[in-house]
Length: 224
Ligand SMILES: *[C@@H]1O[C@H](CO)[C@@H](O)[C@H](O)[C@H]1NC(C)=O
Image (cartoon, rainbow, N blue to C red; front, side, top):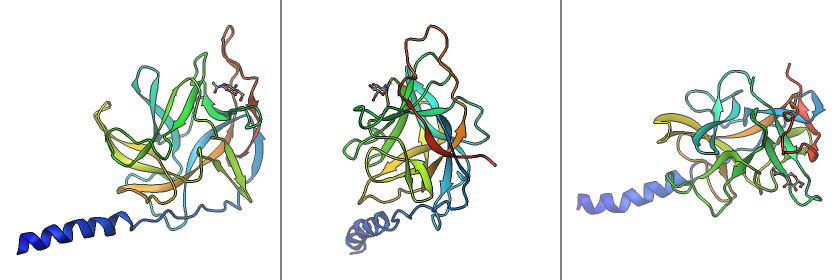
């Protein structure tokens, strides 16, 4: 009898848990001082009422960590960005818009976010993000709504940061996730916005085959 009850209750309480964390709305960011720049760093901003995870992700920066040839997992790093700047490459009118970072090399690395039907191979039901050699996902750019400037996704949804064990690094990391409409914030995750902080985009090194011809100027927040 007890075993039977448990087998009925367990899936029910799992369902309750799964729907318990709706995605909170973004902070309007009305106090920001905006400027324009081609280069930017991407800083985590928590959403009002979202809480945080341990260790805190507030104010940390989006970087990549090596997980294979030409592949970096998108994670959150503490400390100030001293690394190379991101930039928006192309426009919808040009047929492709993505967010790239040269990472101090002679070629671009693109921010790639899994679409609504593509999932992390280890963490079932989660959409991951990478910064891989070559282009990024089409549609990702800096978007502005009223006074909010933030990193957009390939379609409507929300970025999140989660504490996850990463086998390649054999360590717990704070990885970037994307939540599509109808999905909820995962366990040990927090919904966030990535705010572009104005930064200087370094030119490509002499002799590089890549181009900055499609780089777009974006609105970004001036660091105080
Ligand atoms: C940069 O943008 C241009 C114009 O949309 C596009 O043709 C090109 O493939 C993009 N490059 C990368 C590396 O994404």
